[in-house]
Image (cartoon, rainbow, N blue to C red; front, side, top):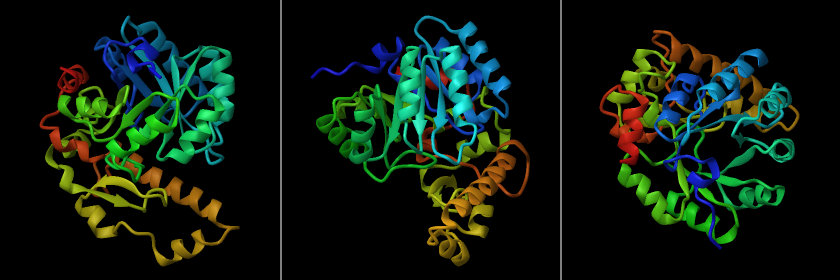
Length: 316
């Protein structure tokens, strides 16, 4: 079976999605990405209100150019109480695509397909890939063990090959791409395109502090560690002095509470809120409490530059 390429799925010139990154992604980045012939995606949770979300969609639709595409990421589990309203806005405004994370995409697929929106689903293994395939997803975002943020546990080569062999869906690889050679490597494994996040943190257009951007230049692959302190689920961050000071493991109290079936949901939600607030402050303010989320692909970030220059580095 010949699977559609990412360029044909999204009518873009280059097989690349600028991955949705909490606090980092914004309309400026996506507009510049579209001008460079790629797709851009923003977490819906980057907007506090539905009006702000709707305004961003309208802005991107008006800025859209041939060869570019834009979409939004939805957290589709119960912890996101804004999910259904966010989905309604995205469907009303008819974005190009939606990427779902952390939950069942069934409702998103059903509602989005009614208005012609494609839905790509984050997956980390074959079991979940088969589930979203049965629900009618348009493609898989294969989150591997080199991804930034909440990563998977399987190598890019192994994950891409398994999903290609055992599902009918196109596979978009997420993680491990910071150069043209690495992009070509993912395509050689059978991916139809790639989703790239961390290299774009240090762009002029990203909405984070200059200190966060510079950290992506100064630190490298060896400085990325997994922490359970943000959401309770392991997440990749730069190993700053503050991260070293507070540690990366949950306390014994948190571990005990997470084993309690009754309390687990609420503990995780509170942990996520505390962690998100810490990440927000670190991303936007100059503070000694630096919790900067990034993946190992900052290794090849040698300067703060424009989105267009980063796209060229990845694709030319």
